[in-house]
Length: 589
Ligand code: PMP
Image (cartoon, rainbow, N blue to C red; front, side):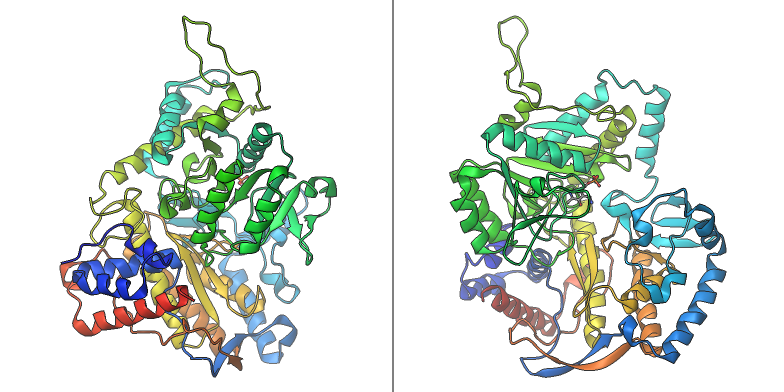
């Protein structure tokens, strides 16, 4: 019997194996391995079940836009406003009290005039495990994931203990501690990068990474990609206009900075040509390998070509893995795609809930920060060329303690990995107990069930996912009243999301929590359907063959597979096989 090799899924997707060969391998696998291969492919491509249609016109629901509200919709909004005010009265009362002195851009994010009355942040009281509690006594399942930070949920005991112990030791900022020595060593081990720098935030980590690239190459321009976010600094904030020029991204940002940035289309071969043609000017290429705003786009082959070109042209390649790092695998997307950049920026998860950023990279670049190592007892000295770097709180002992506790836990989890899981444990084995396998598999099953539901109800929604990061996407529209109401109703149905869109499953979420999230999504959408916020429209289905009939889901459970589940019957396997063939068609086009 054929055994499932860790790289098979990747080879299939990147077309290194012919379809016939892929099917031969598939046929030779055990039933359990067949399921695992399908999971791997789905996880890497983001495909779950796909919408029906074969190039012909089809009926699909469309979300109502705020410009199309009628009396019945307005009456519903009025009723909902009253219910919501009764649900979170103290949170609502905080808005007029504190709006003036408390400045926060998020407050007005996605604000829609027609439902302004419903648009306010609730005030949290506390958070624990998978839940947040508000000051009105409501408890929500938190899938906001704290913008990707708390992978172990809120108040993970090992982090709380480590931070309390650090507090007890005082907070000396000027010197080193054993913890920072141990933490940097462990981060280096987990990420595979030679050297590690702590910064105060992700923004700062990206700033330092681009500075390293410029210092190393004596070139000016940073190439980056449309659709990515790399933090707040002026050195990376630029937009691309229709002609491909870089424009300052907003008020207060200088065109002079944007002129040093080349904004390219992500995943587009032409971008590689531009990088090659302008190599002598390009100090570094900065990539968010799976953009959290466009999770469906995972251009692995493009990234591999980019890696080759940047090596050839001696351009440092920087992967910004702020969200994906330690989320989908310890290294991030680079661990999944098997691509090693020169420098990586991390943040979020390694801070364990406290603010941090990390720059991790090869010695060649990281030595530019401290001049490199030197030895006692000889005449070795640090290199003279050093970039400017500082940060009062870069090594704040509280966050270093929470970082170390988080890293130790991740290492412990990786030790549970089954031998047949790949080295970064990035593929789903149905029996592996490592947290990445469990998290990624459970998220995928939840997404599959909901995507199936959207298809069955002709809803124009899909969820994109990568590991335990996922995001709801309205297919034909971007943030209108229906979408806003859906998230509000989910809150009223006990699920807290993030208005910026990224959602996360953590190790603290139980199967029951995930089941409740699924039910809250369905219930919220049923309300909106009933109240006329979706209307039927004729949609020209794309011609691509990946728009296939959705198969009956094989596994709906969010639990680890039991032996009984693994023993899927022949009919189910045939369906899986059909799905594989169709997915392959999509990727071979
Ligand atoms: N890069 C990426 C990919 C991010 O997602 C973020 C923040 N969401 C940043 C950089 C900036 O990190 P921070 O907010 O910690 O400054």
